[in-house]
Amino acid sequence: MNDAETVKVIRAALEREPRVNLHANRIDIRCEGPVVTLEGEVDGIVAKKLALEMAAAAKGVTGIVDRLRLAQAEQMEDGAIRDHICDALMEDLAFRDYGVRSLVKGTWEERRTTRGGGRLDVDVENGIVTLNGEAGSLSHKRLAGVFAWWVPGSRDVINGLEVNPPMADNDFELADAVLLVLEKDPFVNASQIRIGVKNYVVTLDGLVSKPKERDMAEADAWYVFRVNSVVNRLQVVG
Image (tube, rainbow, N blue to C red):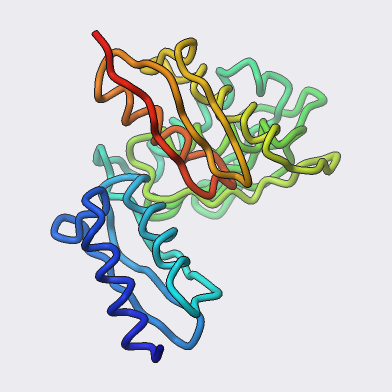
């Protein structure tokens, strides 16, 4: 296929997926050889991740440039987003020994000095959050990223945290992280949810009490770093 045909195939796939909803979400698709760029604003993490997944699945595509941003669920300035993320990190017991810094007008401000744990550096520009520093485990790296996504003004999260000491990633690590995130979410009852992971594809099984809880559990799974896809088999009861 030539570039124009690739764009046409991807657009057709996105139009067939109601959760992407091209009528509500503005997505520009560009193709240069085997590399596809998606740019625009979408209404949630599920639309963003599904659009990227579908573009990557098109024949001949070997690279994706992700310039999709989430529409802010709540209007927030960069400073407010930064403060919310730093507060969430410092309040959670998982990061009690971590140092936290934030970039304010080009200067790093120490929010909390390290207590023998890792270091979390938070920068926000135009609603795009960048996390750098060191995390003590893959689960800590993933949880920090989800905390950033949970702030309603966040439009994208770039998780550049290095894991020190380095550790191998696998499906079991990812399943543990997804469970941890669901347990941290006050709007999701994780006790009724079973998590399966194969080749970084997460499957959610079990029961939830409301359709909104079902959607939130799926979004939580998509927020987790390195999740390739989510199969939502949760059933609503009650």
